[in-house]
Image (cartoon, rainbow, N blue to C red; front, side, top):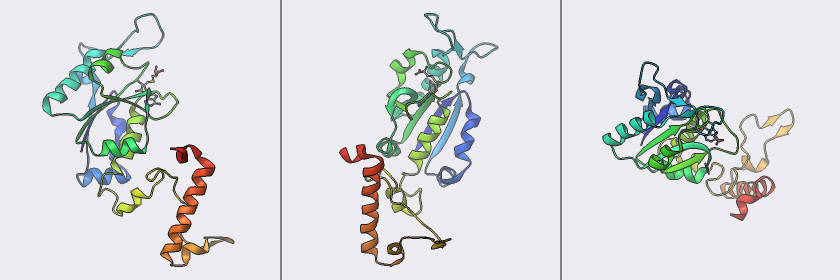
Length: 225
Ligand code: SAH
């Protein structure tokens, strides 16, 4: 899949392109990420990308033209399945969305800044608006990186042990069971015996029990769904 990210701060995205699972996925060709500096599409000597809001509020608003030019250029080059905008008033991002987006071919991901973007961009170009939670960030870049990271790890083949992504929290509507590694005994704090029993059936039953009790205690809302 290909993700085109429109941002005022393309350099920030090295945080995902240069590390860990996303880096490997890009290296193996599972995902291509292209960043586009919105400022490159602005006019004039100062390449202005923001302006005062109508109606006299404080703060600045990202202007239509540079963003529109960038989106139109990309759309002339290929078909896009989704044009996403990161915004606190969007639908809250979750695992289902990550799974769904991971099946698309081409996505544009627009990052806002300042007070946000001119509403007409949203009306004209955006197919889906996504929030990463009920709080306000300075810009959409971190939100976009959160989304890209969640999307890339569920693309089949990206995580070598495929069941690993499937056993993560939320994939089966439940939180994940606790995990342990060596040493089996840390200053008297022991790994549950059952995990060392070698009995796969009992281990799976134990894990499911743990998932259910954890979900009941921490996120009962997931069980209601
Ligand atoms: N005035 C806006 C917030 C602007 S914050 C409002 O009250 O809704 C600046 C930019 O940061 C936004 O345009 C958006 O792209 C990004 N952003 C901030 N919080 C976000 C969140 N929770 N999820 C996704 N993007 C967010």
